[in-house]
Length: 250
Image 1: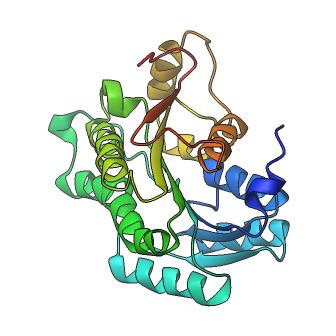
Image 2: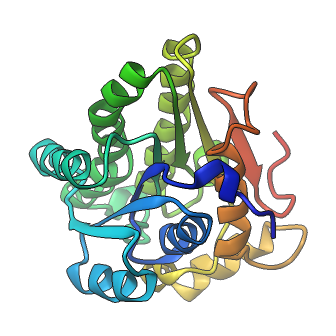
Image 3: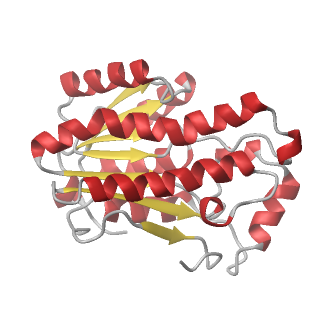
């Protein structure tokens, strides 16, 4: 495992969806490398549990990322307690119900879009001003290979993640001359708690599409997140980085 302690010591990092899965794994790795991490999650119990395991270099904040006022309040707390954010990692997301378009409720469509896409936009909009003032920043958004290819019975999720990809491209180009780099990752199925929201049939479909024949691990995603969050990543912005075991090659 690469040591990023010279990169991340005392860096102020916000991780959404930090209570589980990719966000939780990334928070552990960032703190192990000296970062000061704000753990954002909607699940209060998950936040309490992870902060106990991570110790003093973290603060846990209950946030609804689809609510701009909740995000602003959380961001102000980060600024007051640990400093101006330099790295934003948007991991929060939901899979939504597996259903055909015909059988997808409008409220469920809106819920998935609001969390996965609008929530990412709200968090970026709130934090970008800090990074512009500092002439430096790294933003990493977690999208999905479903946003490239579309998954059947998951139109809301696929559309939301496609939106994250194109939003990343737009924001990265807006900020290309500011010292702020914005990239996203498009994983295939990753072995996290989110899979509890997915039917066994849909899970089997997703794995069948992967040439490597297995799910990815949160640690594999966090490795790429750390590189994209570092100064080692200096000439990539607006990009979608594949992490799909060969499912997608573009």
